[in-house]
Image (cartoon, rainbow, N blue to C red; front, side, top):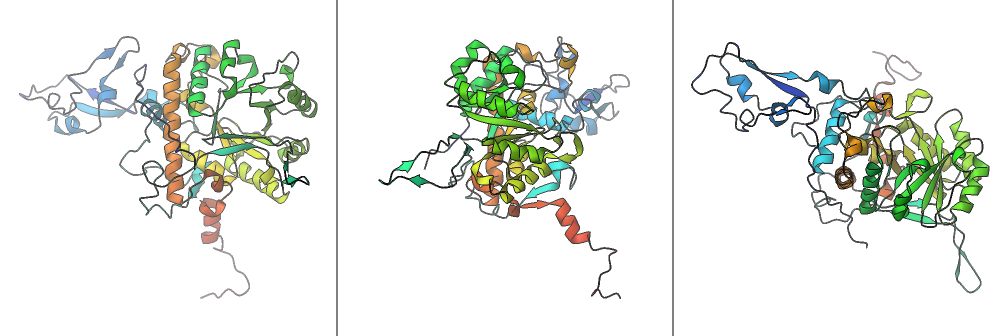
Length: 465
């Protein structure tokens, strides 16, 4: 049995004061000048340590306040109040919500699982992965704890083609069939986001994190600098048809990704010549008749398909269809065609929480790509000012390589621990066993149909009172 895979995290403080959900409003007008002011009785010393950040013009009181509300309740003149911060509520969008961004900040800073201690305050069900639950029937066994427990839980996955059967020659020696496998200890591959204040140092930090995590980082080939090639074994060049001409191969590259288009068959042959020892993955945008395109890619000899959704977790040109349904659809298509065990199915687009990793694998993916969470871990506010060529409010492009690597390792460590928690509660000790195991999942649509689907419906054999 291999040694236990552990991601070692460490506290890595913010470079800027983060926006908080609520703020303290302390009025001076009308103060009764009490002998002992409630501000002096603050057990956290919030008012004594109060400072103003000259660069950001942010009052430190909002970040230091622990929301105990003692000052709010005990002020006789009721001059102290807590209020929702409008700047916080304007962050992100409907998918990358302020609460999700704040949790990703916390994980990037501490490397810990975000636990409120006050239960789950959200809705019972929602769109996409929020309408799916995992079966945690083994949660009553405290020894099956992948983080601190005694049982071994593997999160390693194999990427590449596996042979349908083994062939042996007359002397009993196994005949090589050309299939290749790339194993990584974490079912997560990082990639450079489509937008952001991203400098070369930012990418170097992500590459350094990929090396320490023993995983990979997907980078558009035009953004790969010569000094990146020192760690080319942890880089996935992302190549389009316009990048083929003049492209130089690298013998240390273990995997490349091609963005599928009408020239895919011809260009894939060129990529195999340029990168003879590398696995070739195809990124399939989920638009049009993507089911037929997936089968066409497999017929061309590709063993790795990346299902590319939108950045908000939808399936390409259909805003009503979520990645949860699309992954499951393609997985079942390959099962019915008898091809599923011979190739690797990756998924990307809109994965914003650690639970999305486990749920994607349950739906049929082998591993997932993560992009914007590793950017948000660097204090990104998803304001998209960078797309308008406006300066980044937290100057991500100026962050040091070591700081970027540490924050990235922290968030991946927190996600890895959450994956272990889910698998331990489900009683599954190998993440490869989790793939497509929908019998260990519950879907709101199916439950709703089973319980309420027969209401107002009369069929033969029904007895009416």
